[in-house]
Image (cartoon, rainbow, N blue to C red):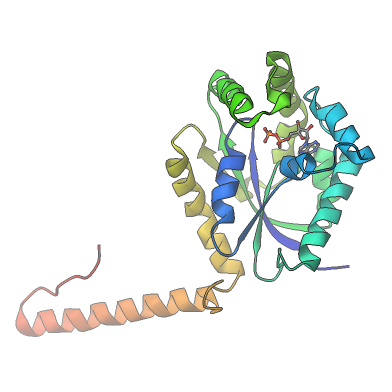
Length: 243
Ligand code: ADP
C-alpha cells in the first residue's frame, strides 16, 4: 500500500471561496492545491466520464461517489508520477472532495487528514449572489440558473455538510468566509502554517522546520538573557529589534 497523502481539507458551501483560497495557497511553496471540480472540468466532455460529469453537474447533483474517488485517485497518481505533486514535500490541500460521507470513507485509505478548514458562511443569500456573479464571469453553466444554484445548496446541506462528522472536532478549524480574500487567507494561514511546519521540511532550504523554529526561539531567548544582563549592569533598557 503506498503511503497516505498528508492532507488538509478546504471545506464549505458552494460559493464560500474554497477555490479562491486554494488558488492562492497553491502559489505558496510546499502547498499543493487540488480542486475536484476543476479536475472534472478539464475532462474531455465527449468522453464517457466527461459526459457523466455534465449529466450530473448541469443539474447541481454530485457525480456518483465511486466514480469520483476513482477519477480523483487516478489523477493524483498521474500528478505524482510526473513529480508535479511530491507527497514527501507537499501538504495536499483538497478542495471539493470529499463531498459525501461515502467519499470520506473511500478516501480514508489514501489520506492522512491533518486538519479541516471549514469556511463558514453565516449568510446563505450572500453566498448565492456570489455564485451568480461567478457564473457570469467564469461561464459556469452549473451556476447560471437560479434553480441549479439552489439545488447545489440543498445537496451541500444534505450530503456534504455531514462529512464534518467524519473527523474529530479537534481537527476542525472554523474560518469566517465573508471577509475579504486577504482576511480569509490570513486566518487560513494561521491554521495551516503550523501544520506544514510540524510535518514537512522548509520547502526552500530543506531544513526541518521544527528544529529551525526551535533554534530561532533558543537564539531569541539567549539574546533576551544577554540583553537583560546588559540592562542590569548598565541600568539602560535594551533596544528591541523588530516588532
Ligand atoms: P463549487 O466549488 O462551486 O462548489 P465545484 O467546482 O467543486 O463547485 O464542482 C462542480 C460540480 O462538479 C459539482 O456540482 C459536482 O457535480 C461535481 N463535483 C465536484 N466535486 C465533486 C465530488 N467530490 N463529488 C461529486 N461530484 C463532484
